[in-house]
Image (cartoon, rainbow, N blue to C red; front, side):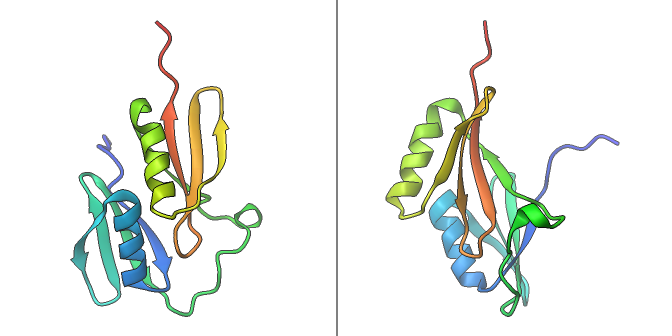
Length: 126
């Protein structure tokens, strides 16, 4: 099998419009399709399925359950600082900035508490 990429990831949300608006503000994702209780948002080859679950409980501590811990979005190295500034200027809190030795990253949470990472890899040694 030859996979060509990740088509989308799907998350449960309490409010479709609130989540769609947040992904638009944070990442420039538009609404691609609406079904009754599911919306697809995204741009280019990045998509997120938003599944309406208005009474779902909070995510809780992802360190204590088997779950997807976070999703990471890749940015080019020269856009990393601009991406961080865009989020901060949009009123979105960022935290846990780190240098893993191979990449720089920071984290943020969407309105329902899904953990997202913005990352860029160190330049390759010449």
